[in-house]
Length: 71
Image (cartoon, rainbow, N blue to C red; front, side):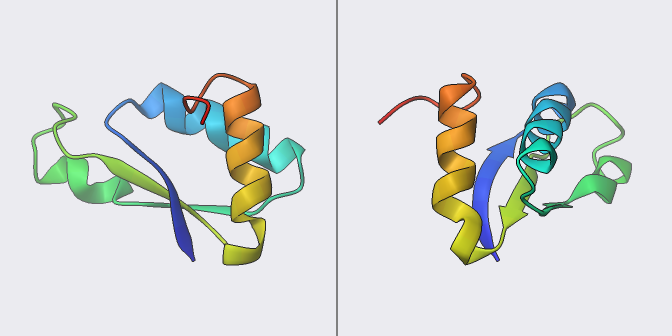
């Protein structure tokens, strides 16, 4: 697994996850339950992971849809 995205905004995670699932790319969101530790204020980022083989295609999909800045 390789990190694709790290953010404290749960709406960005949800949007990115929906985009990638639409592309047939499996994602795993880590640190979802860390909000218990920060009191639900969203101070701790969540990480979106994808398989290494899917990383380039996933990054391109997120760049094309404005989730990640273009390179």
